[in-house]
Image 1 (spheres, rainbow, N blue to C red):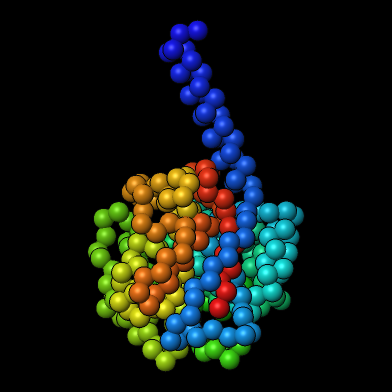
Image 2 (image 1 turned 90 degrees about the vertical axis):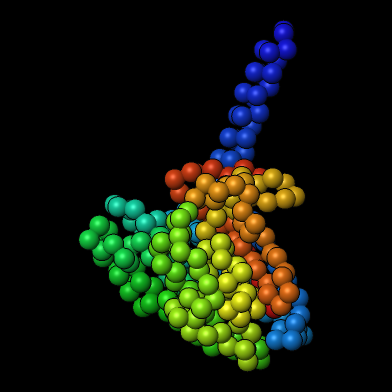
Length: 288
């Protein structure tokens, strides 16, 4: 067998292995734990609390009625559940039923706060194209006890610690490759100033504007959107963004930058490119 044939067979074999791994990872998830560490506004406490952070489900189902995912969230015994957006798919003739089935049961476990991603924004902004899907979705979840934060904030006491949770809803144009820069001033116009007296959590779906989130005054930034970069280089970072930019700085990890901690979820589902390689879906648990 000549070298060219060996190379071809090896390449085909490697491709099948990668595709097989990608399909396997699309059907499973793991739990990833992060501990931001102590700071002036997060001095630590003997009564450690867990915050479950969910993002980018995209109507994925793990077990009947998402029972496997629900049970894993319950096992974490969180004091708070935060949602970073894109739990459904913003396309025509796509039902939000699977996302509803999961999220409407989460308030039985802990208080739930939900910030919009670009898919929710798309459904909300384009009623003439998508109908009243987002109105129905939000109405159902609000009735179940879910708190939506659309450029709004909520103060929460968690084991004696005062937290302020802000949900940032950026304009859809900010998700495009060519966009007007997002600044701390723009965030303040949309969602108001940060609260320097509390531990300030910012739910911001798009991790492309971390510098602005830091300047705005976030202590903990929770993002998603990039699905971990679709494929990850082990020990390094994700490969590609939805806008086809390569090797994004933030794609699926915890980063500490000065007084700000940035956590980017790899997400729980996929859409359009239904593939994950060395990039398992995840439930994120923050230990405070």
